[in-house]
Image (cartoon, rainbow over all chains, first blue to last red; front, side):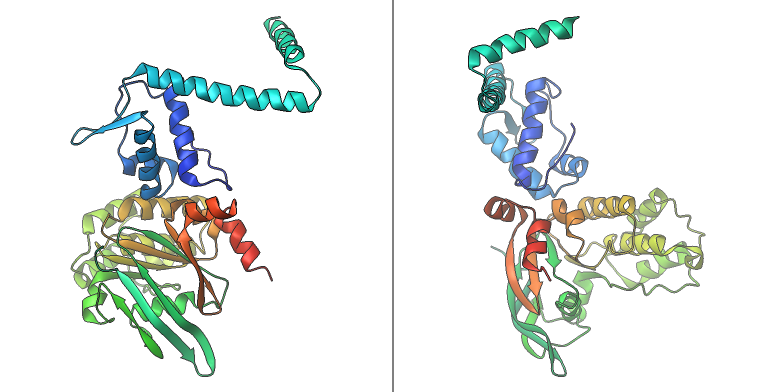
Length: 123
Length: 233
């Protein structure tokens, strides 16, 4: 996992984002075991309590679960992961569409532009 | 809640006519990493010296796990002073033996392991070491004690950014859930990510005591940015 932490947002939110991305991209596969809190905290160079908070929030959201003695795991419910992945994609698309709108493009025009860009990339 | 590991009540300290600390009241729980932040002369070192019993309060009191500073608390507190006090004639090995004799809670294996990772040979004499290396070795021995409270006065002041990362990592991986680490510094951006709580000290008074993420949430900026704003000259 790449831990790029910026300055202005709460650290635990940024840790959640990084771990969520690792899960949706498959870098942390469904059902796999996570390193310990301390290990993750040391990797990210953050306070263990902050990492703990991020992991607890992710448990609450259903992406992680913990087993009392065995440790903490990525959920094996693919539906949860797929749904989160779609949520992330929608956020990106909405942000993108809104900045295209600011430039004066309608959604249809934007889609047309994406097709063009795709063709150019293929060449 | 268990008893605070460090508690100040109405703590005042004056040097002659100058007030270094004025009516400071706060408590720290166990298992936290706390940044004691303030500009030069704000009272950071005075507070840490009071906790070590190197100074006595003018008024009010400071307690470590319920006790006033004294022999009992000295055994619980591991202190990194702002200046090095190591004797130049010692070798790294001498220093480890010295600490091992002096402190019951000193973990010799841990310290030896840390020095190996720092590339310091036991035979190296302190005299031949650079300022940065001395600071690293000193932090290594201080963190090798299994103390309840670590008081680190400017642990990263004199070392390069790469060594800073190593030192912060040493702090992160060596304190346990029952102990609290207090780090005094004005190099905030470097240590912000490892802190639970921050205390802002301004002209001898506490002006803020919050968690790092609460500050980021509330002010929408980093502790470093807030510090620059609050203490702008």
